[in-house]
Length: 162
Length: 162
Image 1 (cartoon, rainbow over the protein chains, first blue to last red):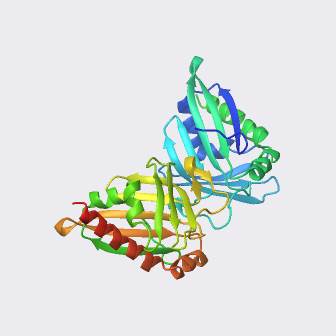
Image 2: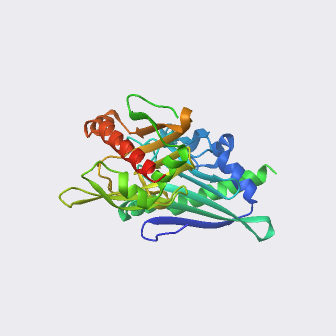
Image 3: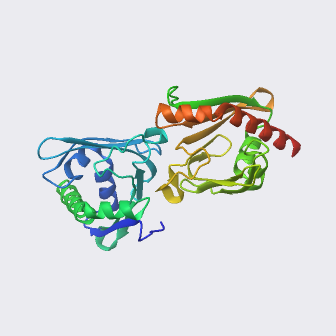
């Protein structure tokens, strides 16, 4: 992956989970509903079809009960290693008409899972944007804090399932 | 492939070529330059990297010498069977900032090659759009005629190379 620091946002963490646990948390709809957005927001629905062109959709609900769908499709999925999707394309790679995403901006995201010492995982989340304006907007929306809180929630959830 | 007749354009032809010949014509830059747009337009450059996320770029030149780049990336490539790319994403799946395409619209295209009787190929070209406006615009730009002429040029070229 070539990272462009002007256009991309990156979160790097070491998670006390195996790559298999991270993968399972990221790709199982029932589990996604339990960690995928910072509380007190909730994910009320998740749809995951891991083939390239398959749907990746979540519905987030604000504390006030308002629902925000995030729809996109997977581009590349390598079990226990890599997960790439975009909200620029709907299932079967159809160009999206309006941005159905809570962020209200187009991005392609990649999650990298690499084995680390002690059965842990080097976890890298990358969001690629089309321009500096969108990167900045995403950063100001709290990308690092938000994705960091979610990583904590993922770690806590998957450890509780051991 | 699910075709949506309100949003997609489809060209179906039987080409007097094998699927392997069609694939070769579609994926070899030097050959693309010889058939990929209706004469007297020319393709002066072609770049092809068939991995998902790899570049697919052509530069078309009008009879007056004006150049029009078409840039996108491959989404799914199955040798001698299927080729899917989009101009919504640049290489490595980065969201496109402005539409770098002669058509001036976003679409995802799929070419299907199926063996037919007599060593021929059932050739299906599908352009998927985000809405009816874009489908109509693409149709009025001469999708069927243009892609049909190109299919003829591809057939003629590849037969000449036997």
